[in-house]
Length: 112
Image (cartoon, rainbow, N blue to C red; front, side):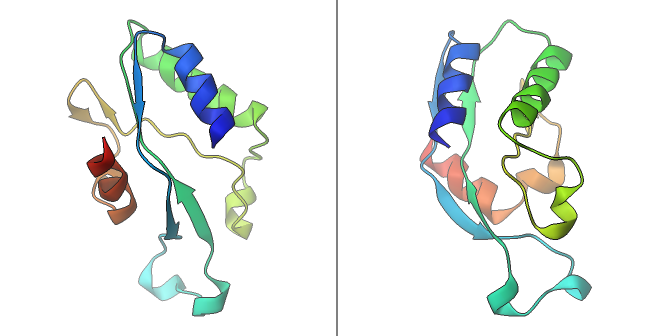
């Protein structure tokens, strides 16, 4: 998480603010709920950034950064996610409504 914070701060020098880190269980559909001791846990944080960069370029940067930090596409099916950087909101528009309503996102957002 520290490396991701540093990369984001460098990429968006106009200003970044970060939430605290918060642990949460994987979000799964009810019919897919594994036994409690097998439930994946994820470390979450929210970053609020200012930028003059275009939306598509920011999204491309996030995906490239994930790859550079060890993210393997498709590994999510086995519960292995090295890092996941999603752009949830952009200039007041919610781009990922399912993420925006999740408890982990709302908890992190309150920190900012």
